[in-house]
Each structure stands twice: as structure tokens, then as C-alpha cells.
Length: 258
Image 1 (tube, rainbow, N blue to C red):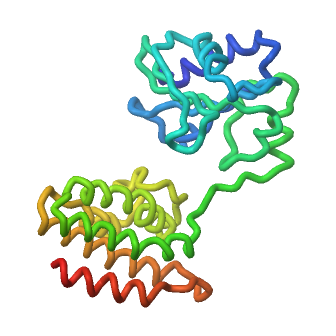
Image 2 (image 1 turned 180 degrees about the vertical axis):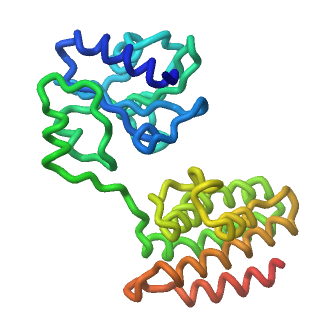
């Protein structure tokens, strides 16, 4: 039994005695049988009363479940209902999403139900459909070329650290998701690109990783542009309005900087 499985067993034994709890489910890599010693644990705790409006209440629940070290809420990833926790003995990263039964119906995947006091969780899973968020191609196209220009400004000024960070941003928000879609995966940023992309696709993505100097930053940015153009051609429908005038002007400026 893995440390994650042992932890969830303890959670169930504790929470099934709590009358305020409707159920507990687990999501993330648990669903695809990809958990290993480095995996975190994604729990969904459904309660009768709303908990997520009060961090102190969230922490109180988290402290019941194990040797709680510390935790913080997930505003930085757009999900304040999640408490990101670190437990000890064993040292384990656990994300706990606190939901009401109404909120549970709106989900990006079907979790595995571990505790369901009166069958409500399973009923919702059977009667509703989950929807994983996919990128809006028009949203990406409208922004990509302005982002490239911004990176060129930073390189031109010698602010290489910001330009370096930009490359990570564009991989996470644009290139990683599009490559995952091309390869038939869910668009989870750059998660597991080392194993879930075709070798040539991963190599194209790896070529957007610079070292800290001007020449490498410009080369990596050029590779990112080339990769984006190829993915755009393969994935975007004709209904997507391409920002060709912006692209042309930005690429002219690219040559000026280069």
C-alpha cells in the first residue's frame, strides 16, 4: 500500500464519524494509476455547510486528518477553495478542495469516491457531466504576438531574467497545452510532457528552453514562434481570426532586435 493510500484510509476512518461531512473523493493522478512516491494527493471534501470561505475552518478540518505541518489556500492557481497542505510522518503533499454538494456537480473530472454517507456523490456523478477546461484558441492568438513583442523588449533592454521567465510562461500557457492536445492528452500545461508527447514534439518544446544569455533567448523565442505557428496550422479551425498584421510587425521587430 502506498503512503497516499494509507493516508486516504485514515481520512475515511476519521471523516465517516463527522456528521458535517457528506463525502470524500480523490482525483488527480490517482485516477490514471500513475501515482508513485513523488505524487501528491488531490482530495475533494464535501460538507453540508460551506467551509471554503474561512481559511481557519479549512485548516481545522485538515488538522484532523494527520500530522499537519502547514497549509495555504490556492488563490495563486485560481482556486481559493483548495487548501494546499504538507503533512509529516510520512512527509506528504495533499491538496484538499472544500466543496458543498451543489459545487461538487461542477467538476473537471470524475473523482473516485472514497466516502459517500448517503449516496449523493455517486448520484451526482451519474447524473451530470464533467468538463475539462480547454484553451480558447482565439484568446491565445489574440495575445501571443503581443507577448512575443514584450519578450523582445526585455531582451533588447538586457532584462534577461524577465525574458527567461517569459519562456516558462509561454510553455505553460500556450505551447504545452497545444502539444498535449495534438498528442491526444488533456491540456495540463507542461505536466508530464517528458512521457506523454511524441519524441519530436518534446524535442521541439525542449528547444524553447534557453540558457541565460541574449543569443540563447532569441533562439529559444524564435523556436517558440516556429512551434506555435505549426501548432496553430494543425489545430486551429478556419473560424479563428489570425492576427497576421500584428504577427508581421512583431516579426519585423524581431529581426531588428536580432
